[in-house]
Length: 534
Length: 67
View 1 (tube, chains in turn brown, cyan):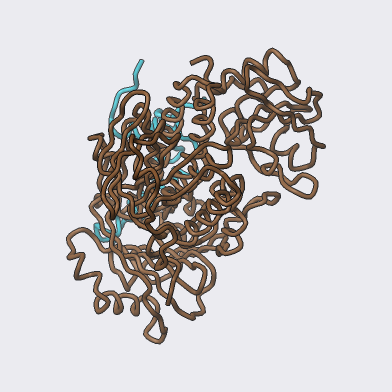
View 2: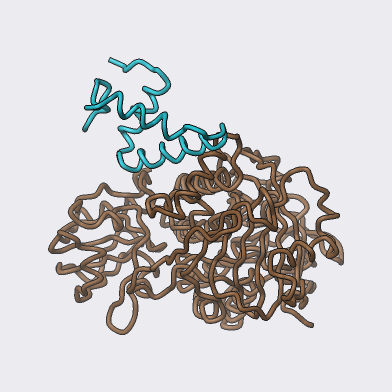
């Protein structure tokens, strides 16, 4: 077979650090080579900051796992130089069907807004996502960027020593001590880093189990998201069918709480369930089966001195809405530019506290949305089931009820409305979607797209307004992007305003906006966006 | 902001009330519960105002209006 997840991509190899007389100090050590850790390493490496990933395994993850990657994640991947292979391999979809009991109650079209480089979502197995990020990291490494992955390397001890972190890394040839100026823990829901440091992780555990299966079949199912409430083949529970690349279909079957996990995972029990769902005549092969229970919870804080938590290690959500990996990518997108300013001495280290503030806010939004989906899919009381069924019955007949059907509110990027890095909005007649704190909406410009021009440091976007080529405070520069106002730019950035100047952060979020360029105002907003007012 | 109307507002109150009872006639408890749930959702959508619906929920809980 030789599937990508069976090939060691970063096998253990002895590193000179293991033979050093005194522990070697690295700039940033990242624990975990999943989607989040890889993204963090690529982002650092692109900016010339040394990043070492340590991971106890040596290959991409087994099974499809996170399969749904949202537009914002693809935009971040574009900034990281690896968006195109993801989109080329991924399956794009806009159509969905909702079934209740034995009947289809309605279908939907996500009808994505035009004029964006990337689609609303792609379906792609996590192992491909990781493979393409590993490829990008290797390309940077071969160009001489200070980045590497050490496989077969398990962190067994961590000491947060104030001005650095000291780690013990266990390898097949024995342990060694490694030091890091900064440590980013991207080691997943069961985060050994979190456990070693004895940190909290509180929240709600949902008493439910899901069987997830990757099935290879040549079937006539269209490229759509199909979701069943209470289907005849899984009475009282739910089911999901979604297409992935290579003729692999992802099936999620809710099993309920009191089950024997090992027994349910056996092919002789899985196959009859799938046959009942797909039809007796469909030929399929099981690629991967897993059972999971999920939780909605987060750490109280994502920053602990020089240790920063990102992705599932910091927060977990239910899978409905694809808010796990997608929010993890938003974490590193938020973190890395701040870490760079701190490492370069351009900002005080309390800028990193705003990583905590902004991403805790994002995690709470994701937990709220995914908990609500879970409460709709698995009603917790007789009365909530009555309302849930009423919504589904009404949705078959009346359009008004369809927005109430909640089989997952698909991941949208977070707007940091209350961020201390924002300068209050002085251009309220411009669209709310581009207010301070928002991720910049994409728009076509010339032969390319706006977002491709943003993200290399701070940008001043000037629309129908004059501005100097750049503005600096200390060593931090915002470079001006003056472009002709197109229909989409006017729609997304001007609204009722006739001109605008936007200050945009390196993570493509709006920090401030004005009708015209004003040097004092721009400098003050730039300083604020770098945490000078904290 | 419009307020929730808590004074008499149905022109033919007895008729409308009779319509409500008639809709439930002959239904089992489960069917009646489902009908009520659908009715609440239909009316909520018609009102289309979160503040009014929150006031209505308060009134339904027999909570007094705060001064």
